[in-house]
Length: 497
Length: 100
Image (cartoon, rainbow over the protein chains, first blue to last red):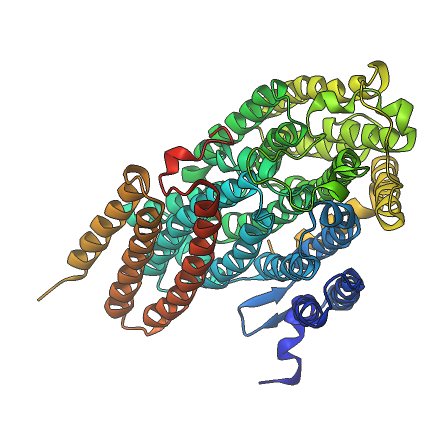
C-alpha cells in the first residue's frame, strides 16, 4: 500500500469522524444540557471541503474502487454545501419536535459520508454499499419523530420501497457481473464496448434492473410513489436534506454508471429514459398543482426537477453533463433554503403555549402545524424578511430569470436541443411554465392574502437566518454570474468521460 | 451436473417469489421477509456466476450483501416496532395517514 492510497477517501473520512464524534458527544450529554454538536459536524464538513479542494485536479484513486476525480469532488463539494445548510437550518426543527439532537446530527453526517462515497465510487459493489449506508441513515432520519404516527408511516413506506428497489439494483449488479466478469466500471465499459454488436438478453436485463434501481432513488416516474409520503412525514430539515443530498448522490452515480460503463448501450436505454424523463416532468408538475400541503407540493416539485436532471443526463453531451452538476448545485441551495423557511414557520405555530402546557404531544392525529399552503397567508405582514427569502427560493425553483434556477434550466434545455431531444426540451419548458403556477400560489398567499392567525413569531435563530440569507445570495450570484461555476463544472466532467 | 442456467432459473424464481410477496402479503413482517428472499436470490446469482466465471469475486460480494441485509433488517424491524406502537396492527392497509 503506497502512502497516498487513502487520499481519495479523506473527505468522507472527515465526515465519518465528525459523525462518530457527534455520537460520542451525545452519549456524554446530560439531559437538557446544550452541546454544540452541530459545530462538530461543521468542523468535519470544513475538513471535507478543504481536502476536496486539495485533491482537485489530482485524479487520485484509492484501491481502484474510489476515485477522487474532479466530477466526484464537485459533487462532494455540493454535498458539503448541503451538509452545512442542513446543520444550520435543522436547529429550529430539532427544538420544536424535541428530536434527539446527537442522533439527528450523527445520522446526517453518516448519510453525507455515504453520499460522498456514492459520488466517487467507481465499482458497482461500492456504489451499492454507499447507497445502503446513505439510505439506512435517511430511513431512520425520516422516522426520527417516533411519537408521530405520520413520521413512522412515512419512514416505513420509504424503507419498504427503498429496500425493494435496492434488491432490484443488486440483481442488476449480479447480472452485470455475470455478463462482464467484473463489477468495476472501467472493465464493464470495455467489455460492453467490445461486444456491443452482439448484445445478449442478460445484458439488457442487467441494464434494465440497474435502471429501475436508479429510477427509484432519483424518484423518476413509475417509481416515485414513496417521495411525497416520505417528504411529508419527515421533519422539514430532513426533507430538505434528503431531497437534495440523496438526489445529488444518486444522480452522480447514475451519470457515472450510464454515461461511462453503459454508454455503448445507449440505443437501449436512451428511448426508455426519454419516456421516463417526459413522464417525470409532466406528472411532477401536474400533480404538484393540486397539493394543499406545501411539503407535498415541494415533493412533487422535486420529482419534476428530477425529470429536468434526467433530460440533462440523457443529452449526454458535454453541455448536458456540466448542466447536471450545475443543476444539482442550484437545486441543493434553493430547495434547502425553501425547507429552511418551512422549518422556521412550523416552529412558529407551537411556540407560544402548546409546548409548555403539553409535556407529551398526543400520538394520535399529530399533524405538524403550518405546513399547508394557506398557512402562509399574510406572512409578508408578520415577517417580511422570511417572506422575501421564501419568494427568492420559490422563484428560483420555478426558473425566473435573475435567479440561479433560470440559468440551470437554460443549460439543461440548451443541452437537450443540441443533442437532438427537442421534444423533451419543449415538454420541459411547458412544464416549467405550469410549475410557475404552484410556486406563485404560495407567493400570492404570502403577499396578497390576509392571514387569520395571530402574528406570534419566535425570533429566527441566528444560524438559520444567516444560512437562509447566504443561500439567497448564492442563488443570485449563480444566476447573475454563473460563468466561473459553470467553468468548474465543465472542467470536472472532462476528467472521467 | 447442474449447469449455470439451473442456478439462474432457481434464483429468478426465488426473486419472483420475493417480489410477489411484497405486493401480495398483508403483514409487515412477512413483507420484510419477502425482501430478504429477494436479496438471497441475488446472493445465489452471485455465487453461481462466481463459480461459472472461476473467480472468487462473486462469493466475496455475498458477504457484503449479507451484511447489508442484516443492517436493513435491523432498521426495518425497528421501524415496524414504532409503527406497531401507534396502531397495534401489522396490516399495511391500516396505515393510511398519508395518501399512497
